[in-house]
Image (cartoon, rainbow, N blue to C red; front, side, top):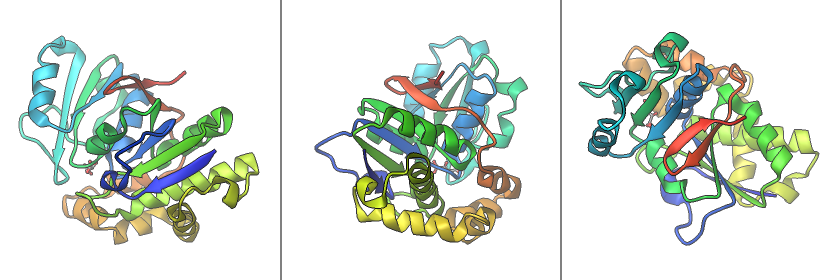
Length: 245
Ligand code: MLT
């Protein structure tokens, strides 16, 4: 098994796809997706384009759908939800399909959706991702941070490093056996520095600061908690994630 970490979807190779691809958008899309599926959401269907989301979701029964739209951290007017995991309580999402478009997270997912297996990772469901990798040992794995409009995001790379670090611990494989690119070693070092104070790291991150400016302090705290959810979102058909297992 070789892991490759890319800080943003724009950095991934364009001429191939891995056996397994993991999208990471800690603040906040992949945290929100895990929350929805853990709360009994029927599925999460993702779109990079808002108009396409509206067109497709219009054909879905209104009582069984929720539309979530976020741009620049803020809720898109006219949508049911923005991208806060705190709005995705069980009583809101149970039995519903979430149609979601966010600034970067859903773009990252679209970039990797042709991979044989597509899953999403965040700190809230870290162990489910690690256990999947340890059990299935895909030959090559991309962990793709969503970044911010093509550039690096501290929190996504730290989460990618957490996946790598916990995987080594669980499998007893060495870093040289697993690291497919230098980014893996760097991401593990980043996680190691901040693992006991992820919330503080989020407050130094550019998107963390953006969210604090939007009064989303509680979102940062929620997203910084490790293993609060026992759920692995996995793509079942192109663009549609469901709870695995
Ligand atoms: C994104 O896709 O860029 C994020 O999830 C933004 C957010 O915090 O809503």
